[in-house]
Image (cartoon, rainbow over all chains, first blue to last red; front, side, top):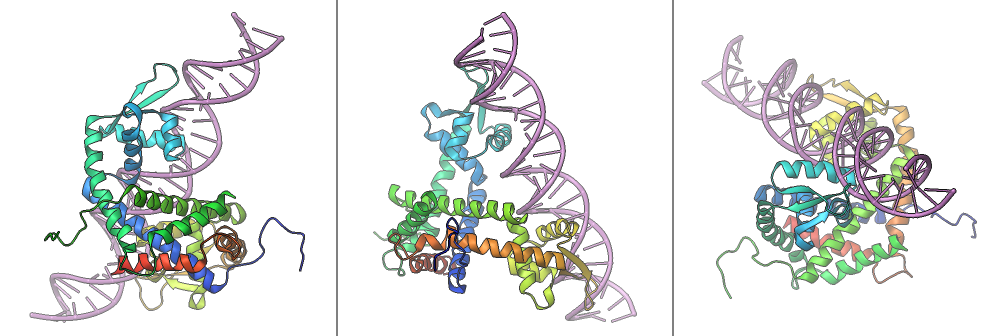
Length: 161
Length: 161
DNA sequence: TCCTCCTAGTTGACATGTCAATCATATAGA
DNA sequence: TCTATATGATTGACATGTCAACTAGGAGGA
């Protein structure tokens, strides 16, 4: 049975495994798309906007260096730069020159951005509760949030390891 | 405890629930982005290309009406139309007028498209095995593929219900 | 100083996605 | 038949994402 090709599996998933995989992906897409639509409808913010505003609202002084922001939300810098241009035009954030590094820019949450984020956040959290958390309520089905965590953790360990 | 506002939960997730949610989303994003990058690198196909080619290769006569194709892969028709234009330019598919409905178009898999799909498919399935299925191998962690299925099923039931 | 290299951020070209409008053809009903 | 409406598909305008180039300013060593 031994075979020297070690790095990659040569197996393919069974039909059953493939079905589980496809359901997993499809369900994830579905819930995210529902959440995105609801966020947009109820607050006028995209999920991208929300990530940016969340990171800024949690940051010291409601401001972050552009690169730091990019790494917090795991975006490419160019993507962030384009997106900040659009958000700045809508008055959600402003960019200011950085005092300690003349190359740098600081992204600052505006009062309007903060207030829009607060409103969006309340409604978004309720949506996460309804669409995700409530699916694992005690009386419900087989699975609990603990099961979700185990699955996620197994995947993360595998991808990291 | 009773409250007449019934349709929507007023609760927000706890910090713990929110953490589970964020890990769930982030891990899903991560695995999909790895798979997409590998697919692109190894076959030159995007995940969109792959969906289209998969649907066509499973279809009767390797051809589908444009609308049917859109509904099989759950895309908007306009998205499909744009994408098919690009795929047609690369020789993966062709569009032919439909014999029974003069408005319609049939999308047909070309020989080149079929052969590229076969190659891509083999490599993609191995990637799914490695990145997803193998994470739930017997000896591994706590979670099994059954746990994934339970979680997915609970979510689906909740979203449908 | 003055090279050289590194880092921060922006920009432009292009790929892809959404939405609303359009065009041609079917289809149903007066 | 003739007209109103519905459907299949494409198109164009625009939002968003990626990639590679570019600008400008730090940082270290000869």
